[in-house]
Length: 268
Ligand SMILES: Nc1ncnc2c1ncn2[C@@H]1O[C@H](COP(=O)(O)OP(=O)(O)O)[C@@H](O)[C@H]1O
Ligand SMILES: [Mg+2]
Image (tube, rainbow, N blue to C red; front, side, top):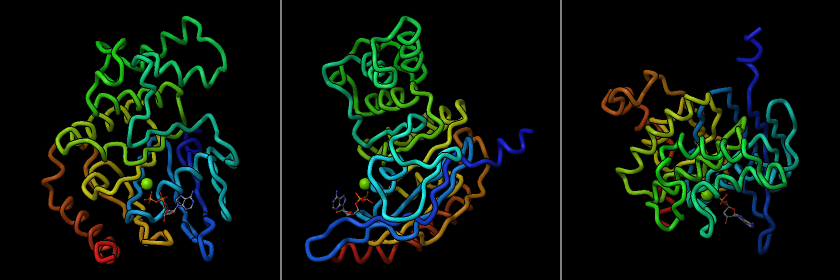
């Protein structure tokens, strides 16, 4: 019986095409983009700046329309923002006038459209605890470091108990060391909740370290250039996977795929 549960994808993106109205002619941003994520799986998307990664996440979340193809979450076609998806942005996007726990409560208020009951408030506190901020419940965003703010963003997303988590360069604004800490921290959380997640990143090492599979997009229009599967030991945070020869192999494979687009970007 569990066979079906295991093999049913949480997310199926097939043949997505997206065009924005341009100045002279329409700008094709995404062309025939497909990807799949299974339960408990973290899939990364990497590609040059402007190749349509954020646009793709918005389409998956049903926030903007596409011009062709289909997005399905747990076999339901997405045509408006589903409650089963939560998003973490690069900048925490916290409400500055609300405390940490109130920011997480806000996500639940949006779901239930009324004041929270005691049980729901307790759930908000649990998720603040889960991201290690139990001692900062009543702090305001400006009293927190960038990494802590991102944790609140993740707590807010998790509190909705989503089937799918979308992360748009969630650690991109953090310093290099904090980013490494956050990667391990997020991986352990993702495993604990067996979450399916799509991670957009411009960081090659982050893609190899965090995901099982990476979808490499081309520069405008964004097309799938290659899907690279990483065969690396599980429980990655418990050993120094970055020093394995395979890690270096995958890193250079991704760089080969991205290099030409990156060079033409740098020369523009
Ligand atoms: N609302 C919009 N209207 C017109 N063009 C847009 C809009 N949003 C994004 N674009 C353009 O679409 C392309 C892809 O943008 P985006 O999805 O943000 O890329 P990425 O996240 O990969 O950097 C860029 O060229 C951007 O300028
Ligand atoms: Mg973006």
